[in-house]
Image (cartoon, rainbow, N blue to C red):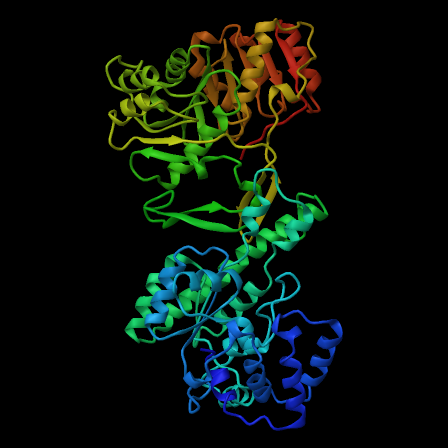
Length: 608
């Protein structure tokens, strides 16, 4: 059935000369095939402006090809424009379409649909009225124009409580839609597919008619139910069966519809900006976030919290904790995400097998060894008190042997207390490794993550705004460690300086790291002055400081009777810092006096 538009139109006499002219045009073979010449199209458009829409619809319905001819005997000549229940369905993702179509049909809805959606419904045994039977106009311009027509949008946007809207629809023979179910061309999937797509293909995958229908239905949600997610089909059908008018339900669907279109448009905008300008910082920036989980609380129990995944195109297959798979343990908390992110970002920087232990987003133990078991033990030994209850990260697979070591290892402080951890994160696990770790604790969170890709945009919120910057992706291989002292470091000292410098990058400012043999001995973080961070790091390193490397995230403002001289007096063998202070000469002279190698990197690593 055509619905209310054809119901009223089919009963109207068509004796006017203009109507007969239109009838003859519509009954030609060219129109029946929906392929007519430019001249015919021009004549039709010219006639259309002079002919009432009601007789136009009446004659055009008779002129449809045999397969699309309407059974006018089934139409109710007494039916007003608002009488029949109609649902408009147009989907790219046809998941659960049969469920939806059958459900609506059982509830007495006339289903109007487009192209592939209509075919899928018909194949499922659902009766369908094709959109062109309402618009009396074929799909054209390679599918760009299907539903952009007053007979569609008038039926969506008309307010039922406005008399002049009702009169306008009756005058033009337009029926209303009560339900609109639409999702959009898979633009997101297309432009993020392996190998990508051409610019022209990207443009063709930008949906126009779909967003227009969704926005129209969402705007008029008081009268029209709009659905963009197949997961909402059961709720929709239950709502329609109940016969209740719950405005909150309608508003929630409308919100979801606008959010769906906004997220879609943000993807188009992000993609097109990269195709056009390439600048990382566009004049306007939209970041689509999708709720991944509600959290028990935030940093503290009195703060509510949630976790959102970034759906920007740049984050697709780009790794990170947000996309990690949790194999075991309690649900992640707000602080768990922060700590796991810090641990994973740090361990992923190292090329050799490495273990990193983090507490309150600072690495308290880091070690690189060919033997990952030794690396793990050394990481714990660096600060066993802080490591207890921390996050342990590895940059290689966790197998059964390593898992057993994690499960059974005793704290170096007393040799008895079994180490407890909140989270283990690694790039992969063997089946046996997972089995062993699951047996350590019911609460232990086991995460499998992919390394963060370089070149991401880093965002951070401040009151009333956001700061944006390039991610800090520099590693020792990307910079020069320039010797500015009289003493040149040995090869092993240089390696230790590079290791300490990479660790310091992940420590909160003011950051000092002391390391030897690719193992962190001590670190000082978050102090208002660099001298205090140095003293904390020296205290943790203890007697092992002799001949060790020291790295600072920023230059030393003073040398004599300050941090540089204290470091030299403690027995440090080599110091790596950015340089850039007006007193750099003092630092050089001080190191020369004590026979310490001094390296300038010209790269600062502040981390606030």
